[in-house]
Image (cartoon, rainbow, N blue to C red; front, side):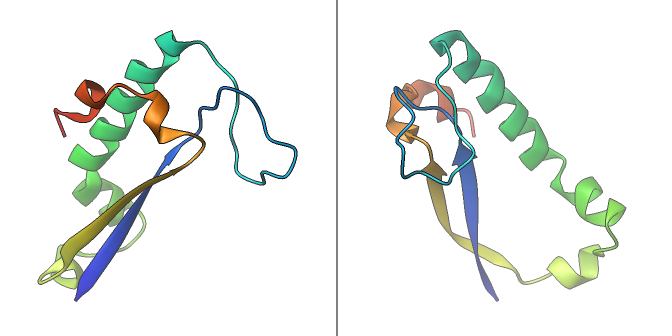
Length: 85
């Protein structure tokens, strides 16, 4: 089974009036801690799945074939922030 992963990047330069995503205009010093939190969550995915009742057996054979960064303006983040994923 293939799986797509969506990673919300909730940062924008300005908040568009039509946008329904949870986003905000924040200083750039918030970007790296947010990316670190996302990385931590990914590293702990087995424990997080277990906590909500998804067994490791159910995840066997699952292939993540797509990762989508979206929400706000992902291009605001320096690509080096994501390089450690």
